[in-house]
Length: 418
Image (cartoon, helix red, strand yellow):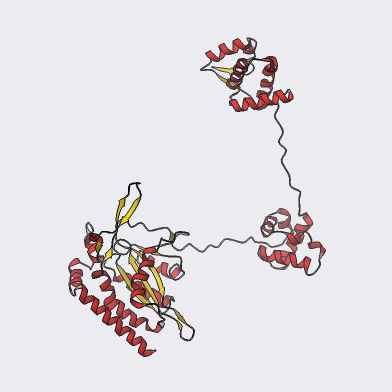
């Protein structure tokens, strides 16, 4: 059932008791109003007819409930309208007066701004602001008095105005760069699968007389901690790209994801093209997430720096260092050097905590073989029988002795040449 607000006048004639009876019996009745102004006028008329100020507290509550029912307004809104009626004797819609700021820059100022900008071939806002200030302060041009204190942001506001666009002959707004984004900003999620490598660069110092030192490229798989290290003379594409290709091919499993920080040595068109060719996705660290590439950075200190040190090594020795890395060091890291793999447990508060138990120390190769269905991650030409032969060629101690011997020979060569 629908009651029009005009029809409700019949209810008002019944007095407060009539309203109470109506409210008890109107659970399924809804009102229909035509406009806000009509509703306000009706509320004012009802309050006047019932002489609201003279009613008892109980009767006022009944009348408020009736006004809520018929108008659809909340109790708070009805209370505000009644307060307005008590103060002014009326319930009317207040007209909103919008505040208007005084116009600071007139049409002449905008046309002068456009003329100055056009003379200087439309420089950026900061440069144009400096020109406007100099025209007033250094050259004493009074017409620039208003514009001399304009902000850079408001220069761009005025450039969008009709007055400005009509005053210039040719004006193109600064366009955003259309250079495609390289790499996706996210933390990789391997989901216990190998093939998600983290990559970082270790620089072996600079020398004012000899130039740049050698660069070490350190890559490590997130799940297995399988690590491959290489060395390049410089980060130019002619040195970096062949080394990345060689390092990726050294892994016995297929590489799915390549993650680096935001350094330009990896986040560039040439590396992206190489990874696209190899069907490898490229991701980069997120802003304000310093631990996105923490695994590679940790290995920089505990592996590369521990073996090579911090002293300057000329980039010309990159080939000799690679003979050491690919000759024995990478094999030692993955088949004979145990790494700690954490076990995730929950404490009493439900927080995840990493625990490192003795059973969690394994070589990357042992960790690889422990994966369920590990064979499915191998490259097509690789088998565990071949990898077992590599592991069993030397004991851990024998391989460590070979690494120390080859490293001493490397440094002897470098010192002899120096």
